[in-house]
Image (cartoon, rainbow, N blue to C red; front, side, top):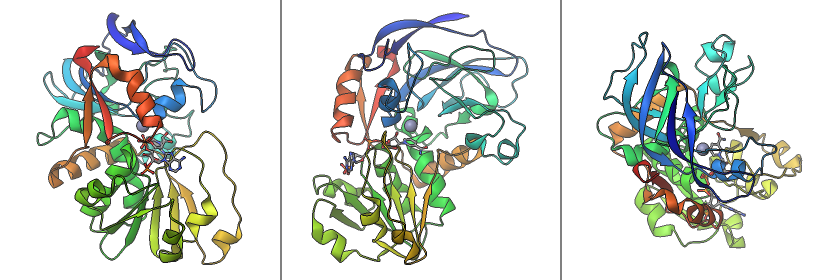
Length: 347
Ligand code: NAP
Ligand code: ZN
């Protein structure tokens, strides 16, 4: 066991504060990672404030981890000391169910994936996330960060990147497809970059036009404000795919009206309250309403390689750990441009 510095929420809704946690000894198939950067995902806030239901405290959030391997177990074959690596939202799963075997570990049916934090590991330990100096992770749940990507802008790819890449690929975003990205925060801005790189025609649907210039620079072809009722008239029946990254409940019926016949509305945003739906919104036009959760380990590696090939990471605001609570407030008021990343050396 090693004692490492971390930032934790001591209780639901309490501000995060500096503390120490224990990391397990490096096992046969484990890597010890010196964390360099950790992104702040809106999911960290939902969980630290118990918005998704009962959580485990103290909680060390953080599932967008980028760092360097400091030690490897005797059985490790994929990584060596000095390698640049990342860890996303999960640190284990059953490895035996059909989903795990198919590389869809996030949908593990053998007990569910083990979250990077706010979960109980196979050995009974509570998991603690990336707002810390070091983490010990099984090599099979660790990915390689390509040389072309700096670690700070790579960190957010471990959740924001994969969570948008996976559904964009699954629902065939590409040339000839009209894709709308709903919400331009951490996930949304990665959705814009990735959908553009895949060759789709990209529209941002944001609450206001405040971030329009940025959206167009990141690869959007069009940018509309959802606060303007004219947007819904003008864009009715326009999109093959709408990817919603919105963290609050939405009027689904209104957005489903923007799909073409056979279009799909895919939700990755995970609001704390349920939403309502008039089923005629999907009946008329044979539309699909779907959801998607992060992505598997293999696909996360594919996404990192894709981003490196296209020469982009996330747009970030680098902060010191002492600024985490302030950053949470800015995320909650949609004032993030476009991902806060903690410099782990300040923890
Ligand atoms: P974020 O940076 O806060 O972005 C969310 C964006 O949603 C905001 O920037 C804002 O965009 C829009 N928004 C917020 N409140 C709104 C409201 N009341 N009405 C309309 N739009 C609103 O958050 P994030 O880190 O990207 O995460 C987004 C959501 O995805 C969270 O719920 C998170 O938990 C969830 N998530 C899900 C997965 C998954 O696997 N499915 C993975 C990661 C995160 P504009 O300012 O452009 O309007
Ligand atoms: Zn996340």
